[in-house]
Amino acid sequence: MSTINVASANLDPEAARFVHSTVATYLSGAGWNFVSTPDLADILLVDLDTPAGASAWARLDGSRRPVRVAVTADHGRLASALAVGKPLRYSTLLSTLRRAANGEPGAGEVAGGASRFDPGKHLLGVIQGLVAGGRSAVVDHPDHAAVAIDSARRRWAVAGDRPLTPDIFRLPAGAFEMQMGPLPAALDYRPLEELLYRAAWHASNGRLQAGTDLSTPLRLRRWPDFTRVPYRPIHLRMAAYLQGRSATPLTIAERTGAAVSDVHDLLNACRAAGLITEARSESRPPPEQPSAASREGLLARIRMRLLGGAGKPRAGGDR
Amino acid sequence: MSAEIKIVFTGTVGAGKTTAIASVSDRPPVATDALATDDTGALKPTTTVALDYGEMRLPDGDKLRLYGTPGQHRFRFMWEILAKGALGFVILVDNTRPSPLEDLAGYLDNFGPWIERSAAVVGVTHGEYCRGPDLEQYHEFISRREAAHPVMFTDPRQPRHVITLMDTLLAALEFSTASADGAPET
Image (cartoon, rainbow over all chains, first blue to last red; front, side, top):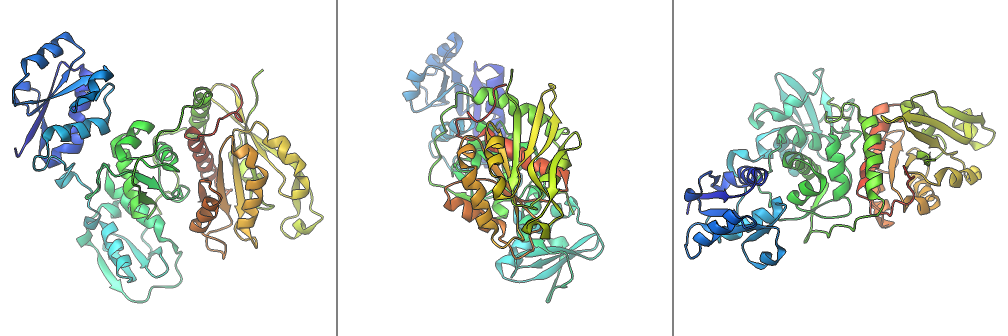
């Protein structure tokens, strides 16, 4: 089938919305749709814990379409190949939906097309191209700051009088001109890692980077220098979670409470800055600590005091 | 009575501990400075001999106490007093000193038993363009010790830098696998 329609039956509204958003966020680019009519479904998620759901499940027994996926809190039923437990999680839901699609063309791909972040279409791609070729240049734009890229020494600087603003990172790559050759010496050069991080962070706009495999666990090689790059408080939580353990993007979202768009922004920025490595498997979650709850409350109070305007991008600024 | 809630700022002489606390404290910090009569005098006219103290008032009225340790090793008897019960540690390292990584090792060793029960973040001060190690070298050095403390360049005069360090410390504490018994009861 070229399009895969997913629907739910008898799920509570919150769970139904979760399925809808998961399909829309991660699968729509690969030809998956969430449909509200079960009759149109190729894959139907059914809440087996309700009498109506169990009845609907029984009615579909023996039919080839739609493929049934059980949603249940009864872990005994999870031995079934096509069942997901409650509460729903992105990672298990996605893997089960893919299994339900049974390897149909496109079923294993996620979030494609225009919804993906392609660094090559932005200033980030221009910088990465220079670095990959070991070339140095001043990257110029008629309305924005000129940026000197010193690939050999992995540093950058603003060249000229115009200040660097976030808008420059969202412009199409073709809008820039490059002046190759020796760079001005008397500039305030900074580590290139910082510019790469910013370029991805501002251009990413919550999108998954093209080529990202959601099933690959990632590990933070080291912390970004958050005193030099913009961040939101949730990014610190994600960085802390990824420090010393590996996880897929969906697990990061689940464990930290971050929106998937925030996960994408951090991972894209860290990937551009060379701070992310891939791991073979996910780390097992650490055991809960007895005093964790009381400490969480304390940390929340301190964080509230520190941040004041929490949620806004902080630090780093945009020089 | 609830235990005090405190974060300890430690690190080398002249790294900026006193300045960092002053940057974020709600009240003028209390300092126990004395004229520097040893080699420290070449770096600054006075130095902390007992502790620095600042505080931030939390939304529920509690105080987050910020203690700065004396940098010199001869005052290390104060370190244990200040470290006991600390929520976490901000270690400031002056990157212009001859061996900043060895300096860091000294503080990680001395505060090791308390850091193991809490968390630490490392702020590298006095510029990233001196001949000192870069962040990658700090990271490798810390990794060789089988630790994973966040490291960032920091200007202690900038409140937002100090707040970022403290905020990072909170995030590290949140996902720390430590038993958290170094944290105070609330």
